[in-house]
Image (spheres, rainbow, N blue to C red):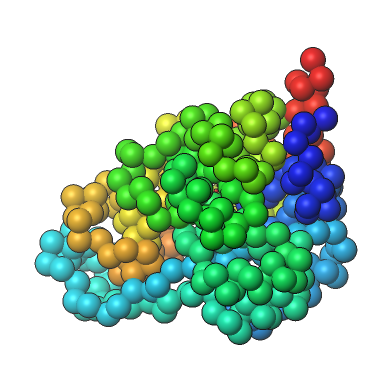
Length: 353
Ligand SMILES: Cc1cc2nc3c(=O)[nH]c(=O)nc-3n(C[C@H](O)[C@H](O)[C@H](O)COP(=O)(O)O)c2cc1C
């Protein structure tokens, strides 16, 4: 029924539905339910080293023996440089409002996905490894592939997809403009320059010979069937899983999603420095005027971190960091395994018509 069976065959899964890795939002409990239901559960290891990754995998394997995906972030970190005056001016009113001091410099460690981590992951032998933000060196990709691991990576332009396939990526996740969370690859920096899922998927399918997974704005079986018709071999869904009882979301975040609307979200660099789609906030609108001075991902976290902690403690909604996509209103508060089963039934009914 899935037309292009390459993804299921290569990953050893029943349904080509990948639960998106979402750092801080989902863990092994949710991912295991997705894998048990025949999809591909993903563990977000974006900020994890070898030891923490091994612990997550051990937990996952206690819960299921089905295939799963490990997701890593690759980025060069951020150097400690002084906060530009224009940025300090935009941040100061928020620091005053929340009663916190602003750091004078910031820095963040690089995440290169180096040799030690690559070897450790190869030993763990997950069915798949996906990369976000960028790719590691060719040798690390070779290490994983030699262990029989399928490599996935997010691209949000045709050029980026081509480049990644040339670098050895086995499956491209075509991430459209609608997607919640951070853009998964370098290339487009201006938020308004992104390509929507409907336009992106068939163009990436035409451009690369490898299986393409559609991501961004897919909220139910209609979206899955549409993605398959566009030539995708499968889908990666993030926002749709956020309201599952197994997710790690706070009650406040769940309540917000329960009343989500199509126009809730916008892109901002104000929290991490990376272009990310999430709930609109007064802070993000305010910081837009200093966007030229906002450090690149993940440097801005050093500056927004203290503000976020203070806002969280006070329940100040002006500075709320909640990432989700444009199809959030389609999301359902139901167990992750049941959701996968429902999504498959919906897509199947449409495709068999
Ligand atoms: C809360 C949240 C956190 C995310 N974190 C990650 C992450 O750690 N790694 C990753 O590869 N993608 C991450 N993403 C992006 C997803 O992989 C995917 O591209 C996106 O969820 C698809 O769009 P959708 O949310 O409309 O389904 C995140 C998305 C959300 C909503």
